[in-house]
Length: 207
Image 1 (cartoon, rainbow, N blue to C red):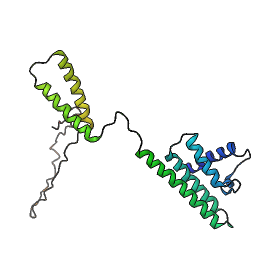
Image 2: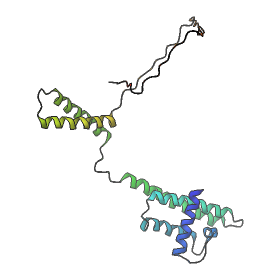
Image 3: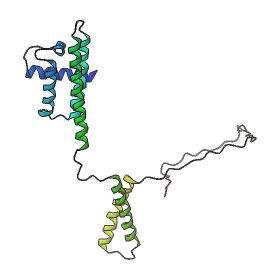
Image 4: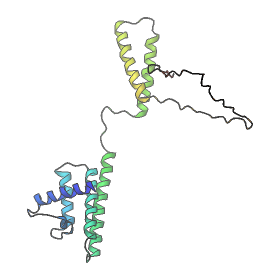
């Protein structure tokens, strides 16, 4: 509802500045002169050409304007059903075209020059790890090689953090024997057990 109100205010502001200086109200969505469909079509063209809005944004505006037009139609008792149906269908087509163009824009959007696929990232991680192991196995390293080893180690750590996926651990629960009886003994009031909380600095390393 809030988005519909915002769309209505933007649309009315555009109509007032573009088409007519008179005061506007909700009856604009029943306008026949100029036709409301032409106003909405010109508004969406203005959004794309002047405001440089994406087609996804335009589709959102079309959806809100469609809701507003349908609400205005419901407010009229002696409406022309055929004309109103044609108006709603035209707005549905306009929204569908904006959504379709938005999907095409996303499909053919140029990739960032630094983008690599998931498979390439995995191959890069493995190749960097192999090179790092080779340098570590070298008996003697020059100062330049040690600097390269340090830099390569940093790169390996970053790649490993971003791309490594550990194998899922499977936990199998075993049910107790059918005749197994568990006896619970109440703790003695004189038997105090000290429970020590784990240290925040104790970390378990998984290889």
